Length: 416
Image 1: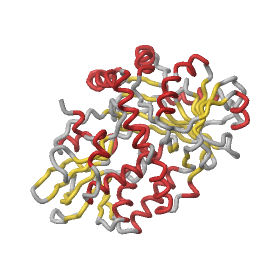
Image 2: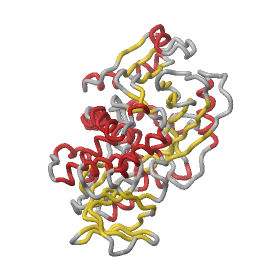
Image 3: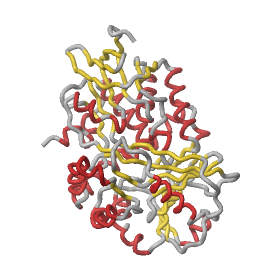
């Protein structure tokens, strides 16, 4: 691309948030350039648990996690772990995470997320029509399993919080769990069922459909690693190895890679990386009807086309280290507690979730310039919140958006 070339809107990052935003802007008649060094939708947008979790307003940091944090971090097999060589780098983030896990902060963060999640399913329904995605979604809800009564008791605060925000949830007896998921072994577990949630049967195909829908509406793409961002009087200049372009407006939707670009736009965002894992097992017939999460193990078992995906846990530790064989083995041992007949996994994956201490994404203009719009940091909710984030970004760019709608997600909240 020539240095003199100019576009109306450049989106840095072609994960699900970037793709959804490109599609929304294109539907509104905007000129859009989508930039990513990798294949669109190939990162965490491809490797996640495939859940559209409109119920997930409980932030990762909360009083229950805070009470258990020393044990969780010291146990290498816990669902929440830390790569100790990265401790020095992670220390400032962990300090903020602890603060955000206190009761008042937890409630404020949950309230902000609940407001955004309340709009998630309607936004998804709109995107389903625009990108022809209906055949890739199942509307069977999601099931949490509490195999220990102590875990169910500890989760009472989360249930009460969600109930207060109007989230549809149902407590299930072991008998009702067996009726809902007859393929699960009888464990005497209590269940929490979220009947309104959906899941994706093939995330890779869904990302391809989003890209095709955006391209059909005129979105262009460029494969480049953007390392430079400079706000100028008449636009924003982006640069990378062998690549330069100027845009009237830039949307930063680069997931776990967004922090450096946000800093160049004037915002210090405490963004860190959660290293997410999955294993996939081929299945001749579905073993489950919906995503099931054994909460003590911290992962989801999601039925997908021709396979069972086991995805989740939290590992803090940056972008550079290779996949942890221990974390993959943890998923393998865990799923075999339910399905010991599984063969060898057909694939394994490590990806990077953009994680903020308060579990809120950053959505809104950069503090230094309204020409730069942030749309990153969605943590475990990127897939769920992509369409509503796209709608909010489009409203901000058009000038018809209400700044109050994104105030809770502003980069300004990190200024001290």
